[in-house]
Length: 253
Image (cartoon, rainbow, N blue to C red; front, side, top):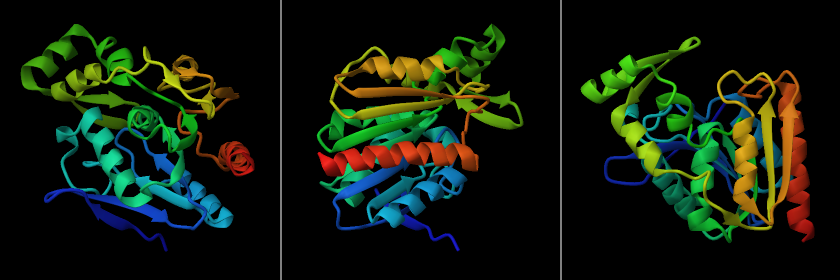
């Protein structure tokens, strides 16, 4: 049975999370994607790995996602970034950690470097999508859709079998959270996984992420025939093998 916990970060806001604690002073932190949760295959696969290796683990649902409190349409990149910052301070504290960001989670993860650069000992991106709100949505929306979002403040966007309520405040906030033009000076391992058949986010986004990092030990893994989520057993084994390599390097250094 899957066990979930709740973290109160303000008088009105509680975030659902999964996690465990061990004494090795290293955590794995998984950040899910846009309108995602911590129920799927990826967070639980990483949690099982962390438990096996006796290291800490944390995966958090942003407000308006999963069973966390709040309305999705009230959230944005700044809000969700701050929620993760608070969650790390409260639950991970001063311990070192490896970040794993899936899709939008990679954007939220990149934003954490300005708060925790000395604590972050590795970063893995899965179908990374920083700045997707402007680069993949707003710029490509037909003029009719953009005008509706500006006029009404919201529009329901269909993508495949999913529907996304896109608000104007979300778009405007996304423009304020530009990260791909910045530089992060760190010597950690940074590994990007991206499916060659990702129909949501092109692999060029993972390539752009790697250009942010100076001095890092960088790796780009294009998964043949892989989709956006890369959550099959085969793909998860490959990601966990890379995670294990990074963990070993940390304990050996």
